Length: 90
Image (cartoon, rainbow, N blue to C red):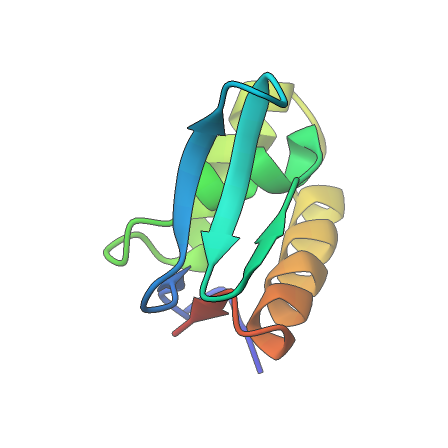
């Protein structure tokens, strides 16, 4: 379970890469590729393995001038889904 105290990072072998053919950033993982939406990309770009989920939430709430509670619910749900898919680990 991902909490605000969790320190998420991209899983081993998972990378964010610019894809010239698609004209956007993609997530490369062993034997798969997916194109994250802008929201997922904003979250993934902040996962450095040192920053906790709470800090990511704070940064996004400030960047988008949005209520922290709404951002927290969305980010934690997204991180949980990404962890279930093996894209991130804590």
